[in-house]
Amino acid sequence: MMTVRMPVLYLSHGAPPLADDRVWSGQLARWSAGLPRPRAVLMVSAHWEEAPLSIGATRTVPLVYDFWGFPQRYYEVTYEAPGAPELADAVRRMLPGVHHDPERGLDHGAYVPLKEMYPDADVPVLQMSMPTLDPERLFELGRRLAPLRDQGVLIVGSGFTTHNLRAMAPAPDAPPPAFTVEFDDWAERSVAAGDVDALLDFEVKAPAARLAHPRTEHFAPLFVALGASADDAGSDAPRGRSVIDGYWFGMAKRSFQFG
Image (cartoon, rainbow, N blue to C red; front, side):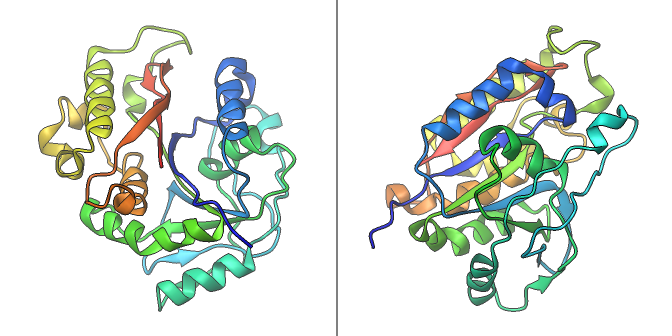
């Protein structure tokens, strides 16, 4: 049976209130509708850092509500996607020594966007931790996972193109701060040009990098996506296209597709 080589995604995942944003949720739904149907999703979220590298539950378990101070209804959201034990086995073969946390459910970096993209929760999902925030190591991790794309696996890096909660705007549609606009523009141009060297060295090369990312965990999933798509062009220069742009509470929600 022939399987279409799946693209790789880096998306800005939003917070639980994303479900109330009809524009953004609609953008995610249209994006997924235009993708080949995945056999499974391998999700790398900014909200799970753990070493050694770990994979989560391979059966349906409760979600991880890893946020505070929201209305109660956001803690009652469910997303009962099937587990992906076959994908977990494939990851173990590719990455010997992977730890398995059988009770670790999907965190909001995983289920919030997936609920908009695959609302029927009928695509098996496996979440994987980030064992480091080092860009080059995450890029290499992505390269090792790339063969999964030929098995119908959609590899998704879930973060946020800018993420400075101290500089959040007071409303979803408020004008973003200048540093957000500058960093977002740089990221879009660098991804479109396939400038992996600059992206991996973004803390030095990007404008206002420390303001856009006081801590880098929300940009880090991009490096996994870059690595997983690096061989598409026959070189280390994966070129991505921007699928979603704009701002949410002053943060850049730009999202990319590779391949």
